[in-house]
Each structure stands twice: as structure tokens, then as C-alpha cells.
Length: 537
Image (cartoon, rainbow, N blue to C red; front, side, top):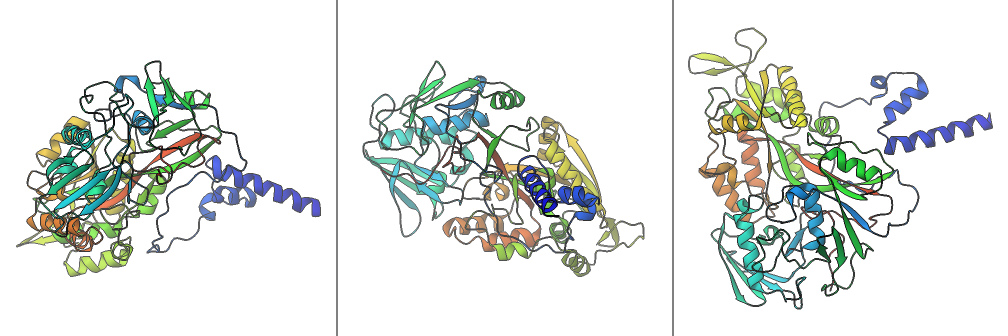
């Protein structure tokens, strides 16, 4: 009997390890041991799941033993996209940027601005002027000392880029007061303009080069080697490497294969991407926070979805936890509000008011007198002297299999409670045209927001996210109030949800994979994947 118990204990330990690293679940383990189905092993789900505080994913707990770090940090490099920080669109290449460049501030996983090349920041009493004092003695790779002119030059490059440009809408002037002082004036009072200053700083005049001159801990060599920068202003780097190498890759599968065969030991991937390739090697996994929100948008000029109550009730039908778990494999955070749950401005109490709840859904239907007037199984909204069914087409970009799957899951959930929604995947160009000309009732969208989660682009008349007649003076005013007091977005978010202006679903996370021991102190930041603790001089 004792031997049998020891054997069962050993078996359970082995299966638990499999659960951590090979996609096994405790339900599967229970089914294996008991002979029941996985469905029978699932815990009962309450009608209104209790909202849990978000947690940043850390290294896989499946890693039980210490492993020696490799001698060289090996990164995947997609050469066709280059290493210019203002033009590259490769997620892998942007991972490399953290070795070559540094920003004034980095936005950490808690969405706080940590100073890097900035030494001090001061905001005027009226919130319209932000003064940045630069660190002394910072040198570019060519030996030139960094000045405020270099920062101003880098700002102009960022402002002109697709990647950073939209965030500077409220900036009025940016000037170099002296060699170590940058002064920013804004048209709207800003409490935390530093959150927007995480773009790379390059030496003046080098922005058009394939690899502009930076201040980072490593220097680029055309032989695809990176060497430690001898004159780096910091004394220690959080990872113990004196060299790094770049491995030429093309496709996501190519990158995965190079990782599993040992030519790459750190990669950053987007698990929701259509090009994502699953990793199976003995590895450590880290979550990397993003500002990428997925949400449901509406045509506010639609006779049906132009009704506030119709839009506002949809949030209560969405099981966001299930969407993140099943459609994104856990690489994301369920979000009831249009801001990352990791941000200090995310109000968990307010978010709970708009979470999954069939009781609140039915309550809102009754208040709005939405019911099945025609007895055809589809809910109707009464408009003047006639009723209209809650039906329409939800368009989605077919380039993302995950977004298509999530759109179908949402449509199914809505149809189960009386809507009649049809999902229409479209190729990217067709999808963009449909958004532009309002050829939709609903759309499932994705947007990379700025680190301060300003929603102005949704509500301004010519805003880049203003689809379906979303422009609103009230929305613009509430966005400005949030920027002035970025610790309190309550009024803006309550208005968005009560009116159903959009319906947030989730914020994506990227996955960082490393071979065991390659990056013990990794703490990925927004847009700066290779990041450790706050820098010290």
C-alpha cells in the first residue's frame, strides 16, 4: 500500500510538471486519474464571475532547476525590416532595439514612467509645461555627448513616424532650453507627459541611417554581432552578457526553429498573430505588457446600434475571461474598461459594474423596453411606431485568425440571448474601406493605444479611431480631463460604458521565450522587452 501511494505521488508530481510546460490542465489530469471526461472535471462557473486582480505573467513555474546562462545573447533578426527604431515594424527587431537605444523614460509593467536618459521631470502648476533635465555624461556610440538637441531631433522623428506619431496630438512646442534641458508645452494640461517619452533617442543627423547612432549598452556591427559599449553611462547591465549575436530569420516558423535548435535564446512573439508558431522547447516564458486593445465598435448612425441601450447592454454578455483563455491562450488581460488592468488608472470597482452578468443584461433590456415584440426569437428595439430586430453584420480583419475566432465567439454569445449577428471576415484593404465608409453595424477592432491610454483619437472629428460616427465633444472634453488628472479616468470610462461608445474586450500580451537561465532578471516593459530593474548611475 505504501509503495502504491509513493507511486501515485510520483505520478501526480510528473503530471503537474506536464501541466506547467506542455499544455496539460488539471482537468485533463483529473480525467486521466478518474476516468471521467474533462467536462465533468471542470469547476462550476458562477453566473457573475468574481473579478480577480490582474497579474503580470512571470517566468514559467515549470522551470525547477537553475541553468547556466549562455555566453552570448542570441536574438532573431529579420533583416528586411531593418533596425531603424522609427520605421521597423518587426516585433523581433524591436526587441533588439533595447540593446542599441535608450529612451528618456521607459514605461514599466505597472505603467509607470521610469527615468532612463532623463534625470528629473518637473510639471508646472497649470500642467501646461513639462521640463526634462537630462543625465550628465551620456555618450552616443560614436563618442559624442548627448544633448537636448539630440532629444529634440529624435522627437521630430518620432512625431513623423506611424509608430509614435499619434500620441503627440496635444503637444504644442518642444524646445531645447540648453544642453541638458528640454521644455515641452502642451495645448491641454498634462499631469504625466513622461509616459509618452519612451521613444528611442538617436544622435542628431543619423535618423535616416539603417542603424542610427544610439546610447544603449551594445554597439551594432554589420557582421551581425553586438559588442558591449565601453563608454556606456551605466556601470552594470541587468543581464550578464558582453556580446550578442543576431541570427538571420524570415518567417515565424523560421524563428521558432532557430530557437529550438539553439541558434536563438531569446525571442518576443505575438501569440495572437496569424504567423505565430508554437514553441515546444525546454524554455522559460515571460509576459510582456502592451497597450494593444481589442474591442467591439459600433455604427452610431445605425437605426439599431445607434441606440445607447442596445450598445450598452452588450458588455454584460461577454465572458472576457473565457475569450482570453481560449482564443489567446492566456496571453492577454480581460478588460472591461478601455485601459489596461495593469494601469494605476484602471478602476477595478467601476470595471466590476460592467462585467459579465446576465442579471444586469436582463435589467437593462427591461429598462429600455427591448423585447421580442414579433415573437420570432430575436429581440427588438422600438423605434417611433415600429420595432427593429437587434441584428446586423460584425466585420473583422481576416488577417488575424484570433480576432476572427473571438468575433465569432462574441456573435454566438449575443445570438444566444436574442441578437442576430453575422460575422463577416474581410481582407485588410476591404476591412479598412468598410470602416471608413461605415459599411457595418458592428466591427471587432484592435488598436495600439498610447501609454497614457488617451482616447481622443476615438472622439475627435478627424481622429484615427473615429469609425461609425463616434465623434463627440463630450468625449473630447472627458479625455482632456483625464490627461489633466491621469490618476482619475473614472468619469471618462463611466461615460464610455454607460453610452456603449465602444465595448472593450481585452488587452493583449506578448510572449517572451528564453532558454533556461538566459535571462533571470528579465522584467519586460512596454515596447522595451529586454528590460530589468530601474536604472541606476
